[in-house]
Image (cartoon, rainbow, N blue to C red):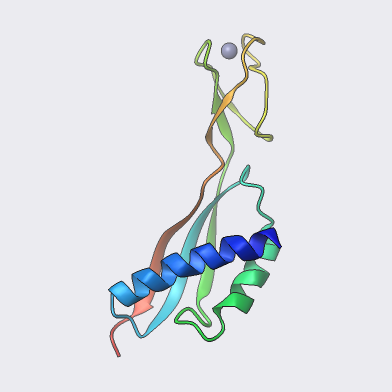
Length: 116
Ligand SMILES: [Zn+2]
């Protein structure tokens, strides 16, 4: 499953940071997930809970910040909201709009319980 791979990568980052902070446990994980990232949020949450068992992040709260899609035309520099990663510029109708926001998928920050 696509989301399981994503979660595995996220967990690796989270555990690295938690170990770096000598944390006893991770309490909150905040993610930035763009609306054009192609990620199913329900599935992501489900996989996260499953994958966190027996890790420092077990029972951690998952907070997801959605980032709206936004693009900029390489020809006329017009900026527009995007619902899909591929769009023609509504201003000049010529160029393909380049995605500038909405494909994010990253760990924004984590909260931990201090060293045991
Ligand atoms: Zn344009």
